[in-house]
Image 1 (cartoon, rainbow, N blue to C red):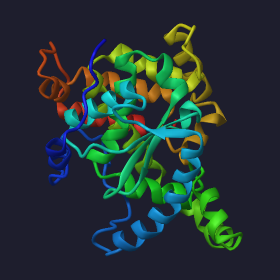
Image 2: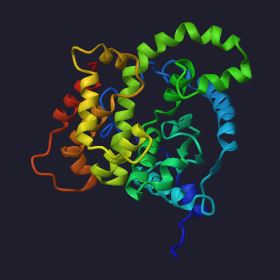
Image 3: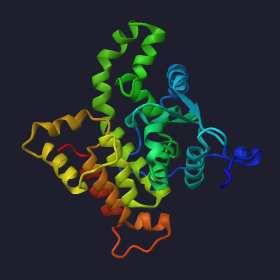
Image 4: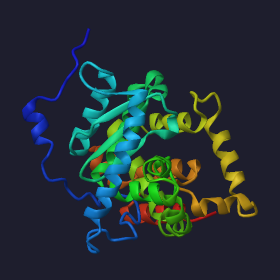
Length: 302
């Protein structure tokens, strides 16, 4: 029987050190289109988001539990490992019965927490679990949480607007509905880039491209994939081919298509940047300039 590591008081206090900027491993266009700090909007927006997220968190806890040394200790160990790898404050993590696609980072940059699916973590390998926990901690490391929560609230993403309507009432829909499409148009490309950045963080934490791909496929298919990965990716490419009208749905999508996410992660895994971050030797590694060029292409529509 292995002992479960836990955060001592000294270790926990040390996690509140000033977080570092990490532009060196974030994907292209990592800065949100609305400069919250320069417009002095951050404090006001975070107050609103904190209130809405508190309502949503209460619902998640109806069918979930905070992870810790005595509650879901394996998941807690994964989150602890990823937070230490990325050098961020250890975030609270709620393990819920929600679907795999409801997993995410919620709250604000100052008060973030993770929402994890028991369906995913129950049968996932340790590398798959750390890819997911790592990519969600990546949003914290890159200070993307406030912008992503604001996007979710205004653009009606991940159920945040529904939670807000319960508190404010139908008047909220009257206010937010007219600007929802505009927000999606303004922020969808940034949001997709943020997801690619999170995938990079997940790979840094799990250290295995194959396990990262398996985790992605499990989230897409909701089960452990029993399909050849290439067949799955070929189907996705066909749906978004130049002649297919389906490719335009990506214009307002919150995430890149899965085959693009996998291609972007493969480029990162074969790059000089990943070689430096993982302290590994990668023959003929892709330069940083080439990596970001390929990433920008994948962020495009079509």
